[in-house]
Length: 424
Image 1 (cartoon, helix red, strand yellow):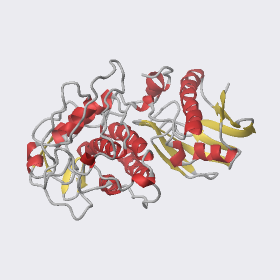
Image 2: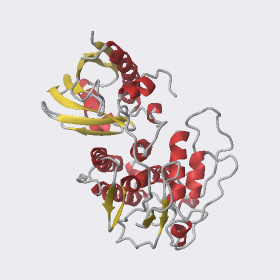
Image 3: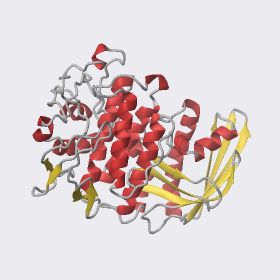
Image 4: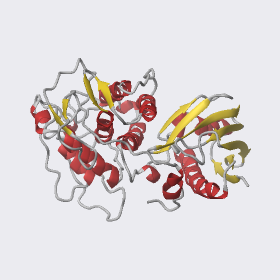
């Protein structure tokens, strides 16, 4: 028997159709990255939870009325891509549009796990329709992380912050004295494209708002890394290095720069302790004394005894932190910072700014010292001279990382994550 569920959203049918089919809308409630070829016979790929993606083919597309597509989890033996079918119909109704979802082709156990998932995400669909964005997804917190899933989890955090930046804020100063918000976003996108090239990614042409530009670049990069995997070595610039090492730096870039964007625009970063701790472990290996001495980072800043994990991460990169005095015990999202007001003079010249020292922008490629074992968090050790970047397009520092352990079956995801009804 197919699974069925309906939800009323306060939008027109055309607006609702865009919310369930367009990548920039899907990122507001369901996906981290999305590639969509919206036509009968076109394919799609959505990363919904870090490390886990669904894929399939559109079989029917009636704008404003109906969309039908095959569904399955990459890496799953029981529900692989194409193994089931999702049918979504839209009906105008008092108060908006009734979204009716049918998921066919699932066994009893598979239906139960997907029912929990659809309940969660259709609830977020209704929130996004009413409020414009469903906000941070607790299911994307990332309890078990490797370089790829950590990059996806931190990308979700960074995208949420960038979606909150109005166009009027694109040229606000950031704590990185060489960059305003737009320049820092361009810097970050350059890192994403550069590391994507190591896995064979074809970069997307940058277009649209800052969040969309980053999302398009990240989608191409992360899908290329999914295809390639983390085994062996890749060529990054002039160097050969472990694949996991090359990708590992992205989680630091995404999360630390999410904090930079939030600091510049008066927003608040929400990230799980598990993700923040993982990224802090990677950063401690990337940002060696040699890197600081070369001018890539300022010296660490004291975060304070009550600082959360995110506070400790950004302080380690040389950024000044005003820690909130208390945190809620047991809150899986307590790694937050108390933000300077976006109009504060310190945004023009951060308190710990020293001429000639960059505030933690990952700027330069370095050589890996492969003689030491990998860190427990998946990071390695850097040494060697730095090279100056060409203009504003930098080559990011990289660090050794462990191999990615992909689950044998994505059904494990359904049992442990997609079947959660009450958060984390």
